[in-house]
Image 1: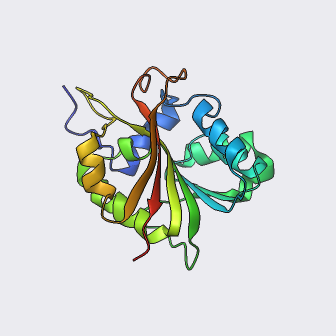
Image 2: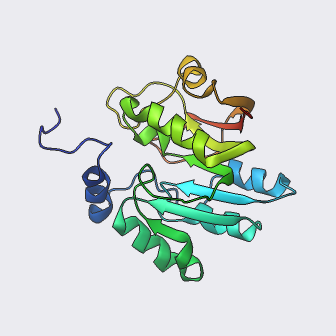
Length: 202
């Protein structure tokens, strides 16, 4: 039974407490195999955003693939860790709330998803969809590993096909989906689907 005083996963304190305690079971220690395959296939890298960037492994991978990459995380300890691991990219990591940070006129060709949507209570999912629609240019993509299945004690909060279409279908078109069979962290193993959603021009 959860403690009533425990912040929920939509609040900064929930994640800060876990990072400070080193309780980060979602940290793979490397980039997922599916992302590596994606980056090797991409021919025209553009401007990318990594929300909930954590330790920053994917940020380095996007940078090495030629992307102009920006990363953001609300946990200060996560940002400090990422900057320590990748000091040459320190200025790419923003310590801020993804939903509140002012990106100004900056928009992105690609936003990368892994472990961010499923970390949010489902009541925050419409905010996620709206924010992605705002930040991704028409024709751009929301791509990455989305969690599908059932979780009796969330977080994480997995999707279903119906929920995904309801959440993203109004402003995104699903271009690609496949189950990831690559090794992952135990909390995600067997539940990750690589998906690419294209922003519909409106």
